[in-house]
Image 1 (cartoon, rainbow, N blue to C red):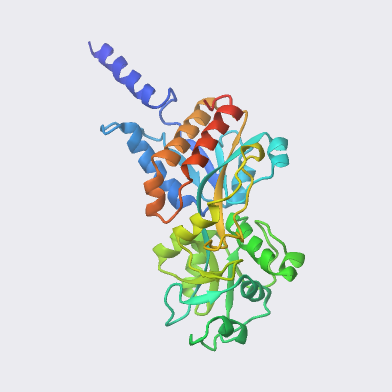
Image 2 (image 1 turned 45 degrees about the vertical axis):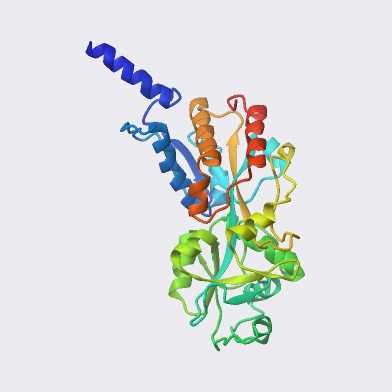
Length: 349
């Protein structure tokens, strides 16, 4: 009788886990931008799998390392890795070259943050041109007339600007420098947009958490961080002038505006940038986290389990995303992603 009961319980547990051996987590790495929501989804995914029971799936959740987008992409070639998360999409030719598929997972914003007294969140305005000149070292003091000109009536301190940036290969850096490149011909010609930059000045730190800590610790500092982390860390952030000339506060509504009419295409692996959107209400440094997977994974069981996790994230995890100040993908785009899995991955249906 005991053996029958044990077999029955084992069958239930294997059914819930898609047949994957317990204790074998899904391995992913990459974006620090998306780390908070991936961690939250990992918890809600396991709770959803338990279906309201007390069953605990030990070690069979998501083992995700927030090492930066570039490192995540580089690690994807390792047999134990099931996915990479990157805030910089790979172009179609690179996807074909490496045998990868790519699809969007969640959206948010890269936000300029400052350490200045007596300024409320969103109380200072900056443009792409100003940000580029600050990161080029052409503007070195917060009282500079160029900053004052965009902030009439705001009392700006006579204080040297300390520039903070990422040292690791970062999708946040890619989106940040894409915006600087769109606003400044000098930045574009000298440095361009990439996950790793040879910065002309400033202090380099590891990961988003490093930027948060450095800005908090340094009076007069400026850096760039994902919006939800900015809110949770209670940092002072700037409104940013968009292509339409409007000063826009970073918030989910302005991120969604940048994505509203975006021409997503599964044929290109959804390769798309929302930086410097022409939409009047759009925040101009809106970013997308993309998932990359191998077409021929070492473990089909883990790869299929990863897709179940992403399905949970895209369908049942929208509330989690909103609670952390991200923007879930619109329903039509979710449908495109699911159809892409079925079409492009032998284990995706």
